[in-house]
Image (cartoon, rainbow, N blue to C red; front, side, top):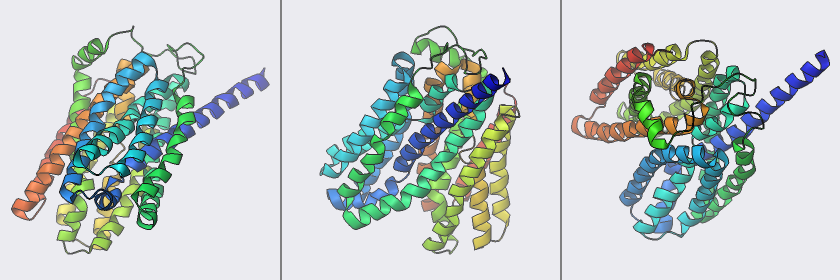
Length: 408
């Protein structure tokens, strides 16, 4: 009997490992594509003959599309299955990679790079991936697996940033994106593995624990129920703030460092600490969420941000302090994903995770849009980012306070 129990336990551990590995591959690769448009930018301008400003506008549209399609594909996953959504995303990504180098007009580039490619990465978003895994792994392991999958974005960026840059610089945009489509196609078997329905009753997790699944409802009914929930509205508010904060870091912080007198190389070197800290923070967040109340982890992470910014206001601006600052921001950067996705699953069930977390992330992207825009306006008007960072301090403090009030 003990041998059978040990064998069963070993099978469960192996299944969790295999599913987690496949999910990490999918999420790391899609993150590596969507986070490296900046590296592709000059190659796209040179290849298409379209001016820099117009290509930048296409990329901005792509950011909104990436956020907007996530709840739509989440609903699609709930209706037709997660495999359908994931494979649709892979097909769109491969099509976008093949077609983008062929674009020679702003309209064609807007369709391929502004819609098709970001729609594909949005279809394979965190909510759909974790919604696929939720019925297959023990509930007690969900937060830890969530943290590991979330941390894989840092691995994807670390590997793919130099790879994409090297391919485009040495062989051109067409060769670079076509080569990139090969590992993208390998996401097909990984998507089938992650997305296929479990053999056991989908109302239970793989450890046999009951899941809080509701009866089948329409998308309208699902969102109507969610918007009536005080807790869901708090998560939306917090993630808007999260997006506002994150876009300041990724879009404006290097420029801010340069304004202090640092070279572009020094700013980029300091910023390398961000990716490493993001991975560490995501792993720690997933671990803590499996041990502590997720609302407390979320409130702490939001609260760490204004404290970090306030401290940086008053310290001398040296290479050491800006590197430490970036690392501190990285610890709370992507770490909020695990508690937010975990709380959505807890309140509304695994089947609703893809759609409802997808909408939460769409609100995140709206926050990113506003801070990226207002940050540029602020810097042009004052020569400093102080005003926009003060706004970020206020918003993050509010997000922290209200997160602690979630009735978990």
